Image (cartoon, one colour):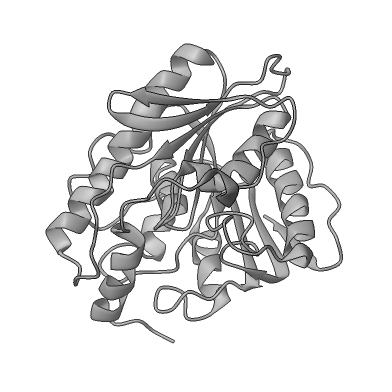
Length: 290
């Protein structure tokens, strides 16, 4: 199924201009793992959740994380805490995004929102350079945030004025959970072919998000278009856009079958970002390495 530019822009409105994230009640989020500490910071006007393990290991990286639409950094604690538990320093951004209010997308506002997301990530990167100096930098994200991470790694969107040099200096790898498919007038195969660093892409056979991903295979587009090596593609049978509400929607009921596969995906992402060999995966997972 091919998207028209109008359909793609309508879908992009939901990705690029979500309603402002509201604070969640304490009962709405799962408890943090024991012995894992997180700081909530305001850095240059950007809200960060900073995970700084007490004893980073030799393989420790500094990870920048960009959330998806209608979300905030706290809705990804299951993922960012898992990375921190392995010794990595993680800065998860809550982006400065205006309320959309259900109106049709304003292209100028969408472009401004894109540039603002990139600017937020640059603020987080500067902060990471002070708290985790010398650590290899990983750009990571989910959904629209996954495209932000890919842009930091060199993927080129079709809008001009992206708010700074790309790829972001220092980014060594990209971890993209459920990145969007091609969006006419915004991102296409040629843009993903500009990726300059190794890439990890995660999706699942229930990861359908009309109209930006009318089939789950749309999420594979960046993996297929990229020319970098290594690049990994993780596909979970029955995994949806929110990993059974493990990420992005943790206040909703959790799908325990997907939760088990989520742990496998985290294990694979850790191996990738640390530069290790692909780990063994469950039978319901296909891991492709090129």
